[in-house]
Image (cartoon, rainbow, N blue to C red):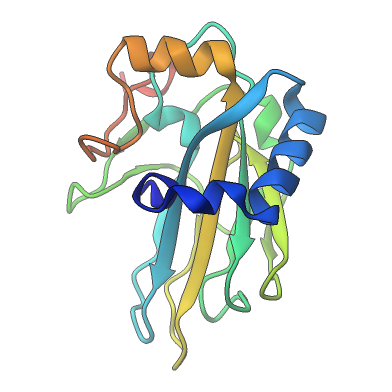
Length: 187
């Protein structure tokens, strides 16, 4: 995570300026970059990214506004692991989440058969935005090519300060992937 921390000039690229403008349009003028990350799916790795809501990874916050902008660096389709979303799920409460069997991620109950679930193929350079409450996942990559994406996450500047004051830094110092939001804890 945090490519822009490893290489600060990334923040000066047009992509960052355009993504910030989109984020401010979607969640408000107080939006700032909270974190960024790169994701890749190697060829012939059929392991999916499980269904989840990003907000389940985050600490409880008084202001839930947040948007992730997922930019395809390679063409992303169903066979190489494009994103799947559940339409309208951003308007619903967080679902209970649990650690995956390998402990590397978290997951919740959802499937491609969920009403409103749809694949969102993108060409390289295209992007899609989603709320922290949006249910999403991706299949594994069954193709000969790599599928890469760059994700930029934005939230109000006051909430970024709130997170940092509580030690939450989205993997900058410690990359622990666990349920942190009490609204997503299983009973």
